[in-house]
Image 1: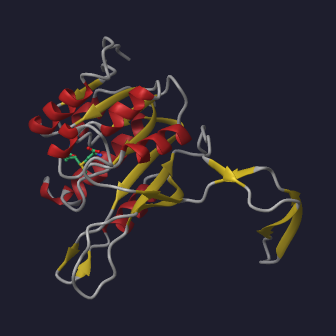
Image 2 (image 1 turned 120 degrees about the horizontal axis):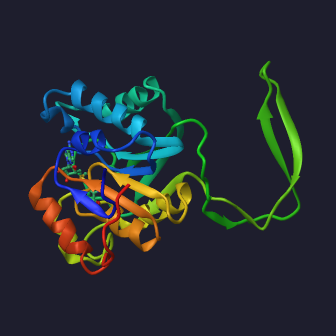
Length: 262
Ligand SMILES: C[S@@+](CC[C@H](N)C(=O)[O-])C[C@H]1O[C@@H](n2cnc3c(N)ncnc32)[C@H](O)[C@@H]1O
């Protein structure tokens, strides 16, 4: 039995153990980059966490995994890629590798370009059951050439009438930082929040009203707040008591309804 609209102040592995099989519609989360290895070694908890996610996710559910690499001893760690391949190995599809592009990143020194983006992987359990794409106006009118590649590598073209709106691309541009990522001052007591707009876009795309959204690394409560505002149910886990308190404080003014259980 697990309560909805609640952040469990515990290891997400424990929360997931108490969840029923295939009870969650969507996961939106951002793990502690490269620090997972601080918890009992790298492989064990990460593997356990993603197997837990696979178990609790409904068929057609999607995990949005926002992640970047640290630079250590002169090299990027490659953790994002390793994690993506690990998700695939245990049965997820790597459905879409999206980019979370920061319009105004922290400037860096040294001989690398400024780090402008993080990955936003969409891992799906089979074919996604929900896709409400963000659209944008089509620039040109009339017929368009759509192409797909046949088995022998030949390109096939098909004329398709353009619609007024088309699916957006998979690079998402966000401004970040104080007063921009969120208006909730308390959230900035957490050092690594993602922007509310990112949560809005992803939750709207991969879920419907009434669905249950889970964030195993809830941090300051961004996923919970946005899921709530979009009329979704939500559950969170957060291992730090301090961050759980910050998130609960932040959510107080938005979430006034009672708990439900599943
Ligand atoms: C990158 S932050 C998430 C920030 C969040 N997206 C936001 O907007 O505030 C990752 C969080 O995961 C928490 N965490 C780390 N390991 C955990 C675990 N095993 N179970 C639950 N939470 C964990 C950390 O304390 C941290 O607050």
